[in-house]
Image (cartoon, rainbow over all chains, first blue to last red; front, top):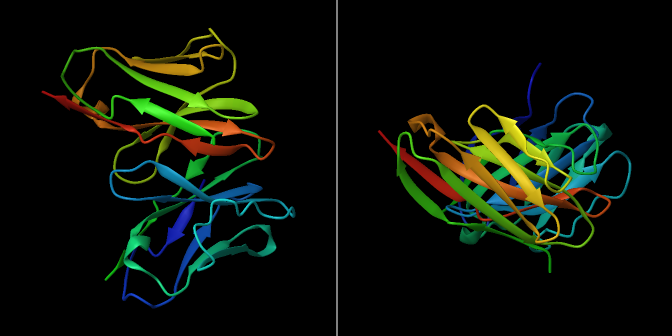
Length: 114
Length: 111
């Protein structure tokens, strides 16, 4: 079946512009995660959605970052007034349930802020 | 603060060598430890470990967890050039199962 789908695969934007990154998880997966990976670094947790529960936003680096998940499926990560330090690969992952189940990752969106 | 530390950060070996990658962790409410392989884009799942001392094996790869000493190792025997990748260790903690990742170990296998 289809894996986790992310779009766009690449995004170049000017400093100060807003961007929206989209994630379409595997059908039936209730848990959805966003991670950020800077060049040569590990994965940095951003936000987590589980079903209809309130999301865990503890990893969002600033109030310029927000995310929503509509209908328990597709998620959008929005970065307002982008800065050069936001340049990274943004990875989305989903799993059938929370609690340490292996995550299935998308191919990510490579964001470059010029 | 929860943290996961991997070592070495990078490693260069020749085909046929055996490598051991290390992962140590300090997290509250440990649930499981996972290993992923990342080649170009999406990390792909290798192993999930929840119990100490039980080796998980898949072909030339194996992994074991020590919950007393708070570490795990990933072994790769008879390495091949296709094993070249970044190997990520992650620990699931708390009720959400949020994964905390280490920095990764970059493995390069030369012919």
